[in-house]
Image (cartoon, rainbow, N blue to C red; front, side, top):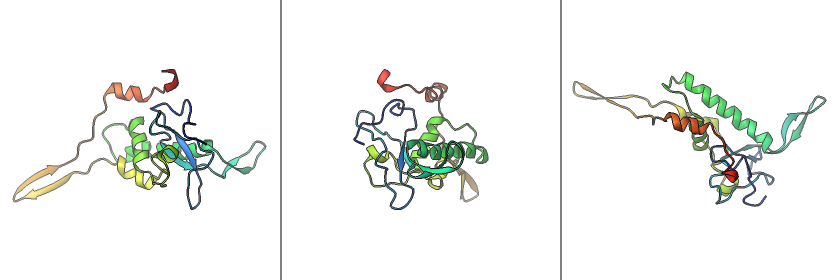
Length: 173
């Protein structure tokens, strides 16, 4: 498709908009996957395999299917795993939907295509997980004194958290 083919609700700022890619090398954005535009920068947010994905069919059995509806479950599953991982990483606060979106985008592999086609790139769990890990405390010794060095996790206000749960179609704003 041409640029600007992503519509509502995918063009909403807070939505995680998923494009489709092929699943085998060379991995490229699928020709049928909608494209973003300067009007809605950063869309799609990410891409995931969505071309010839084995899917269940009415009446039983499986058949290859293609579409962003085949790519979106990959991203949904990855987002759920990242959200669950915070429990095992012993974070002191819950991960917000906006943080999950940022982590998904940070861990992407670049496909060297237009950002209007690939967004941040192909989702990748291995590269996304380190972005959600809590900062590690480092102890630096100088003589007999210990000095703790640590990173600070930015706090999200309640209003920002509430705002991430509202998805509004930009065309109706």
